[in-house]
Figure 1 (cartoon, rainbow, N blue to C red):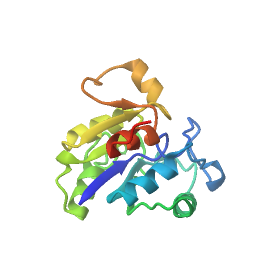
Figure 2: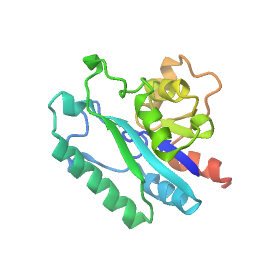
Figure 3: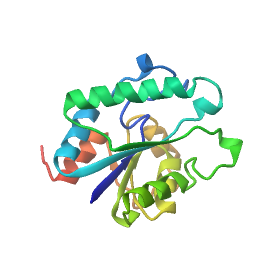
Figure 4: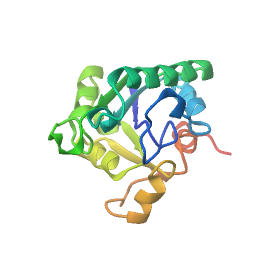
Length: 180
């Protein structure tokens, strides 16, 4: 199985320091839905791994999060793509859970469910904690400049040997060997 793991906010959809709190605030990054469709058509199983501490902070509830993901899935289907699973951590940073990135729990659970050795699996994210989570399970971290990616690049720590792409579409072109 060819598996790829994607962060949500800043990779698939526009991010906000104010959180994505409603389906209306879920706005796909240009080309991201089509990139996921291309990954699916190339035989990849696409899984989302996202911190959603807005639930724990009471900015929105689980029903609203489900509605946001339902919108994402509808838009993906219209673009010809799909995600096989969405994993999320609803906890706040101080909750001490093992699922909130950079902790490895969410990614370990994905590896177990799909019975995949994560060492060959790309994890595409826009933040340092995404990259740290990927490294913690031996996956292949990939940074995109979209979302908080530029901020992550400016901070510059722990970025050695991590490939950087403009966005998910750009990375998908690279992964699938397309040249423009």
